[in-house]
Image (cartoon, rainbow, N blue to C red; front, side, top):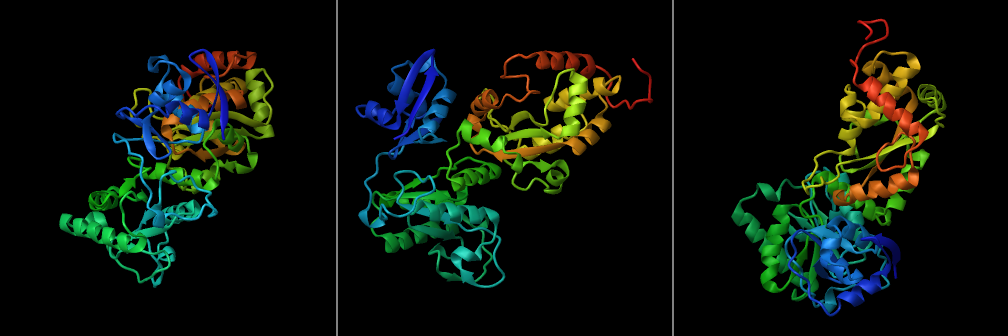
Length: 443
């Protein structure tokens, strides 16, 4: 049992996952408008659950608060318009309780289905080893970690057992005709009946693109099968980061992310980051910036306050906007394009560092070229993918409270150092950028 303590609508609560189950027991889920929480195989609107659990009115708090707290209790969250009815499991589709379950499959799922990918070995292999992409590897790791039976959805062969021998093939379901996809889905349904028995009430946790999901669901629904698509609507980068967190065996909590962000052994040089070309970083997430001893001395000189070597700034990339729209930003875009770009007006960190260095070096304004050189010489960065962009803003709020990086100005308390930093930003950031010492006219 998981128990958390929190404040909501100015009231203190202590709540466990069992408390939530008990308080919704005599109620039925309302229609889902956008966000849902899966509780023992049934999807509920997140605000309805939090209102029932706390006794508050739904107007007393925001959906974002509900999602953050329910995630802390270990429940699966997502987006979608359809609530799943409580399924009746097919006995012959389940696995023993003693099977290892390190991944977070939906509590109601009986079978995991994973789509094939284009990247394959040039020679035959067991199906689980034929596909070579990092994406498939992450899906396979997830499927194996659930402890449930799992199969591969092959655009060429239909349903394939992980150990079945396959030769390389060239077939991609989205490229096939509508008739092919419909017949392919019917073939998969027949193969599933042969593999697991009657499909009535069997819940399939599917990890695939829309063409695969739609074809399989259309064929399984008339037979009583239930398809859950946990990653529905997520862009490729967000899918990758979701598997990263599942594979870590850790819940996405502020404390867990903060621990990663304060782990200096994870920090990479900026040259190393640029050389990676964004591998593993094209997803939402959080990052922390670190300064070496010499760089800390420069910052201390410019601020007139001591800055210790270590973590100096933390931020996020790709959070869902306040109006609910999805951001296309990623860790790679935020760090490589904005923080290491040529315009301080596009980066809070760049504006802060440039202003401090301008005072330390006697520059009339922020020198973009020298700023970039200084960052490469003295900074390193930790980047942590976080799949749930809807919760990033709330995560950042908690993390900044815990880490309290000296150069952050929002969501942290005021200090003499931050007061001075704000003044320097106003003084230097409004001046002409890109002026090297000795060039142009000093203003």
